[in-house]
Image (cartoon, rainbow, N blue to C red; front, top):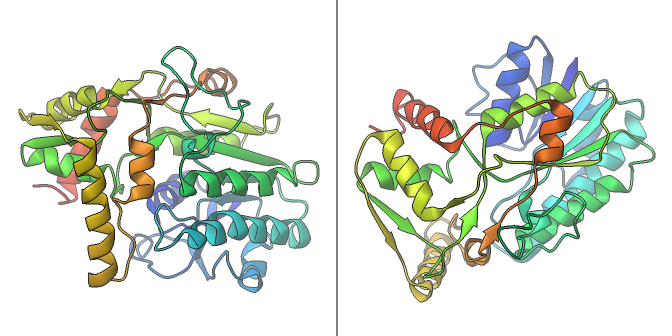
Length: 327
């Protein structure tokens, strides 16, 4: 199979490229700038941007599958979320429809943030539930999904909504491993107890690999996460066990979390003119009590069992150490 991956130099894209290469597939990567994670991989490079339709034409021609991973998790301004996550997705799928209408499948890597949180522990969101995102990131990913679904009767399209992803090459949840390795683990949800589901990156790439050989997908949208939910206190304890070190787990008050996010945003803007990984948009998400979704339909259709956090955290920590991200 010939596969195009957008955002191939990112966390998800890099893992996908490696998986598909091992599987014997021909991989084409659409990248905007940084090639650091792709330098040693036998891939075909196309330079371009999903915000510029002209640069997409050559990239989409002749491929069997498109895995659309490109997007922004953080942005210097609100408009950027929508320019890239919504309009960029619109540009890409319109280009695919025009220049490669016989494509076998277009897969959009969305986010649980597009779906939004649920109201309690006993009623997780279903992929068919009404989307109620709470952040600009989530709203922009939801609108990106809408752009894809406009073509559901013209192209075979699939939307994957992963929960928060962790694993090799991740730089966001890595921060928690980094702090834990230094002996502490702050909880950023304020005084209330919040629950989340997580997804090990290897599970996401395995589902993507299974899609290549499944011509009869029953749904347009799939939620991906380990069924088990965790409080952040539990996550801290599991990471502590994974690194084999006792750590101090403590909760920061809500006002301090918001102040730290504002300070982080301001300092990154002044020092590096870049968006901060820890920002007010993320605080809106962190402070929701129940980030829970129902992945049972995904498990049933793909005959798949998601990796437990206990196992995934150990694999992830070992990778960080082996690759000298942690010492």
